[in-house]
Image 1: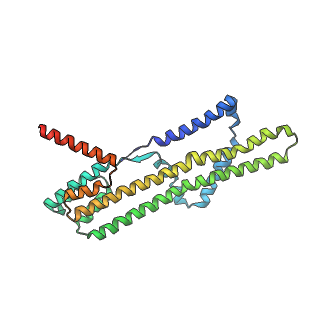
Image 2: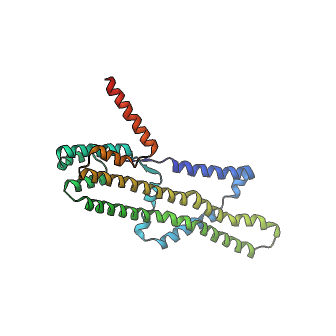
Image 3: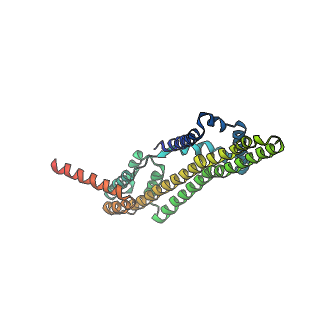
Amino acid sequence: MKKRDILTPVGITLGTIMIMFGILSSGGASGVQSFIQVSSIVIILGGLVAALIINFNISEIKLTFRVFKETFQQNDSNLRELITLFIRLSERARREGLLALESELEEVGDPFIRKGILLAVDGIEPEVIQDIMDAEIAALEERHQRGRSIIEKAGEYAPAWGMIGTLISLVLMLNSLTDPTTLGPKMAVALLTTFYGTVMANLVFIPMAGKLENKTEQEVFIKQIIIEGVIGVQSGQNPKILEEKLSAFLSEEEKQESQEEEAYVGEAANEA
């Protein structure tokens, strides 16, 4: 299940506030007007769109908004709940056989887990299950990489288009330079396009691409745990051994929390 990731908008907002603070603390309210240049914004946005259209095909371009949306969402995954699920499946498989797990699938929402259990129920060999599910992970990484590459390329192109806009402004400025006293203000305007491109790349595109890469790594990590769980259930591993094996994927903090919960449950049972 996905939920809203507030860190992305918070980070962008905080970065914008820091930039505004720097402008206001140096130039006051009038300084903000010096950083507003419509033609520079048009050059940056128009150039980015043109470059991305050239670089990618139409099906990849259509993914852009979906990819941006992913940076504002996060997967609500709980490793301890996942381990508990596979322990329950293992116990039932050892008690009633693998075919009994089909009824459990109605309560499993993750399609990757469902696919793995169905393969196990069908009697597929563990090595084949591993290969099939590894292939699905590889395909997932490839899809995510293609979507992420749009944001990465935007991060590369934005500063370059900022420089192009600055060069255009400098050429026009030098061709019409008649009063040396106007050199400073015109130079400041010329640099704005580079400023816009650098800010967009380093505050929006590059951090978003990094977040998407981290999300992919986390999703692959979860799926690798699922594969280990499915193979453990299929091969009839002892639930205790399977629990120990899957618990190796937990962080020290998660292991500590799990131990505290088990101790609390044990005390409650003794009191009862």
